[in-house]
Image (tube, rainbow, N blue to C red; front, side, top):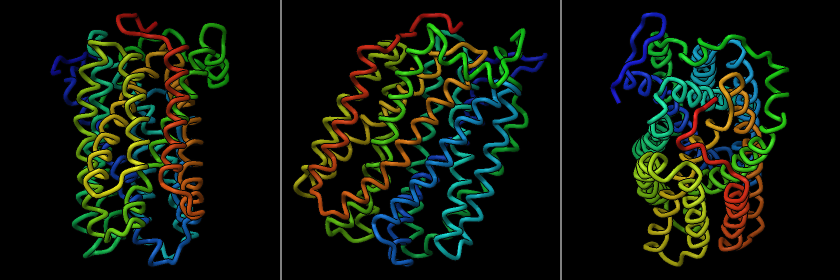
Amino acid sequence: MVDPITVGGKRVSATRILTASGLGLLFDAFDVGILSYVLVSLSKEWHLTHTVTGLVGSISSIGMAIGSGLAGLFADRFGRRSLFLVTLLIYSLATGLSAFAAGIGVFFILRFFVGLGLGGELPVATTYVLESSPDSVRARRVVLLESFWAVGSLVAALVSFFVIPSHGWRIVFLIGAIPALYTIVLRFALPETPKYQHLSQRTSMRQAVRQIWSPGIARRSLVTWILWFVMNYSYYGMFLWLPSVLSDKGYSLVHSLGYSLVMTLAQIPGYLTAAWLVEKWGRKKTLATSMILAALAALAFGFAWNTASIIVFGLLLSYFMLAAFAGTYAFTVEQFPTAFRATGMGWAAGFGRIGSALAPFITGWLLGSQLGYGWVFGIFFAVIIVGFLFVSLLGRETKGQALE
């Protein structure tokens, strides 16, 4: 993983590219993870209903949807590196200011801008790493990049467990913002990707939008849009509410955070397993298998009957769900040519954010309606199965194929 790439006479190791790119995803995951724990304290401090609490998660996803689409378009027009820096700066500033929010209105606005930076960060970073990697290991490196998300989720769980009960929720946003600003410094040293630099002509933003729905590409866009909607709806609907679900089941704040931390540990091996399988098995097979197993784990978690079963099925859900998400990135980013790859990736991820915007609100409404957990997680099971069918029946395998 240390072979360098040369751009404009500048040699940069793959390790440095992965680290500088991955740290941004780590802080993104940290923010998403922190929010799920913060909501437990925030709802009590500001006396928020389940519905309003769900809207906090939804407003972030609206920002992410817009950020993904815009960042993809701008990255194809002006380059991956520039957007790499801008998206992380927006996220960092909005996250730091969230620590000083005096009420839910200001918090809503800041969460929108956090989402704007977050949404733009993910597709641009994925495109950057793919285009900076040799074909023989390109999917593995994309998954290794996404594994930083699991590390960020783990850091969020640790910080929440040790910081929120004793120091409150505001300090965790400052913890997330300050290191993210340092990551911007690291990214200044990165070059533009070789594939983007070698493009003979840059695609205009209008052309890029038309291209992703052109003959031969439209089917890929359809599959990836549905895939991203399914994955975002399921992930954010389940994991944003996980600490609150445990709290509703009667566990204390400390126990809820502790059990969530244990479940989060399974995300890292989930990513690493997918990183190995995408090059051995293929992108499509790894993704489809992980999705069906994640769906079954979600259904089992909904019917968990005691602490042991909650932890076991929570670990399996976390493991398979994150393996599926890793496969989602590797599968999606290889569906589109370099000229409009960031747009294809960004718009699929952006459409998926509609799912992550709806899921926290709908899940909060269902929980507030006293619908049983078996029914709530049964819905997640059904949603994932829909995505599994689209990928299995219509998805295109790209293992061993040239990107162009």
